[in-house]
Length: 342
Image (cartoon, rainbow, N blue to C red; front, side, top):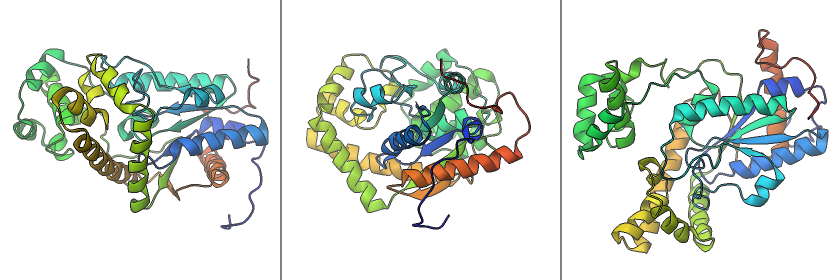
């Protein structure tokens, strides 16, 4: 399509292609993914009268009560558009990516069965890969995990992983304690290298999903991250963190950006200004890691942010049509007209 040219509405015969090849809106934190997803919903509704349902791909929005700091959709937004895979567990609960994978697959099937179109939206790269690719996740070994977690020396744990599974060790930073602990837990608990489970994240097989990522200039993204924190504090983020602290939050919930730093303020006396500054710095670094993660995937289509929702909608239509022409018949791919909503 010619840049700047007017775009026609969606074709009314395109429902099977869009249902078989859902859109995934990706990008770094604070880049405008949720706003774009809501705009996509409004356009599809206005042009064809079809319902879009949004599927969150965010490892921290699964926690109930962790609303402000995770930028969870507001109650008004949830009333306006169906949202899925948010508010699944309490902050004290552990929640593994394998469980997210199974729930997401069921949600996607249910949405299409209702005659709606699923749109994935989020920035948790591993959770996205779990949904769109056939990743295989090993089991849990709680006793091994507890023993490993009692060792405070993350660097030494990484050295241990290097000895046992050098492939896995090379794929993670020596300071990424959570990933190192998980890789060691599986390697020691199962007797097999963690890297032996599945083809690995460096493999990018054909996918039925249309991935569109938002690319935002760094200075603008940095400013948006800081501005969002300022707004979150006005909305009661610190009070929310005080509540989370009283829920005996799990190790994973404690690692959520913003919560981690403010919990240090609430529980350990870190000065508030220092906690805020640290949260902003870490979030900016996290956004850069998100961009690196998504840029490694050759299947991702990049668009400048803020994105034109009509252009993204047409990108989805064109790419879904192309993928459909390459599909082999499968019960996972709708080939008939859209079912009437119940």
